[in-house]
Length: 376
Image 1 (cartoon, rainbow, N blue to C red):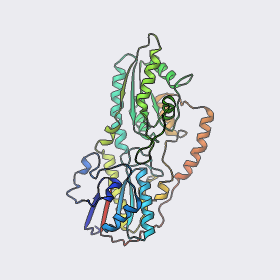
Image 2: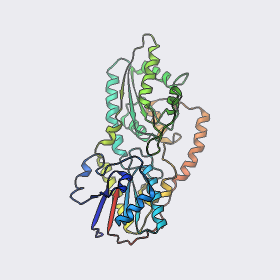
Image 3: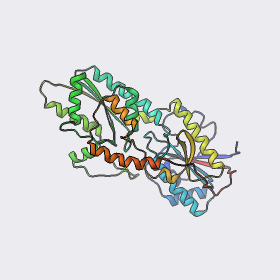
Image 4: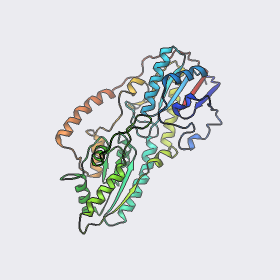
């Protein structure tokens, strides 16, 4: 359509820009990639040296770069765009949101989220079958969600088999009246079995306190998380060891990387195609410094600075979380004062969500650019 003669892929995430090796992408070489999970270009943590990356773009003569990834990747794309603009280079920088966590701000959802929720249900179903088959059976499923509990929340609603959903946005406590352990005991007495879904970032403050853990970070600057699934499972076992004539059978399932590695479902396949079309047409029209995604149901070009202002998180005073509580019949584990404080924070978050279409940040390159690069 646009007469593009060369498309290359950068392997290994941002670190790949430092290598002279690129992957030539042709219609034949990418023909079946939608049938596979993972990424054909590879990925990595860290390695973001803005000056070196832009030097690489300049040396290779790349005039369009499409950067695919989650909130951290979009932040990296934003600073690359600013450096490209500062140097006055004729190169469009476009972001494409891809993360199963659905934690990118402003947009309706990110590519990969629907597939992750669908696959997570398999693990929840397995936990339910195991729990239902044993006396006082408990199934604990840990799902991805470092700072945002969307996968756990939507998988819980979709499965209808979950008795308790724990996410980073909603604090909980174990001991005492109204605590999680009391609820587990009550649910077992009432139903004889239960399933708990916990996002990986939930309860990290409780674990750190009990283990005197000192914060450490990975190569991308993310806080390293302790395994809340193993910790919670052990706490439940320890609690019931103290109970006479109350034996339990607990099964812990961690499908973390299974749900990320599967091939995309039909919904995500269609969504990915729409994102690709929007990104390409935007760059060819002369725009730069934007991410493509639907906002309130309409595909939009969103400036990087709006995308990177903050992470998208579950609003626990909204109806969707109320639906989860209704589905599981779990307590909210929050006091009235906690809820009121969160309502105040949520009002500010909703204000940021009211975004507008990109209204003119033209790239300093011709609309008829004849080459592009994809980085993942």
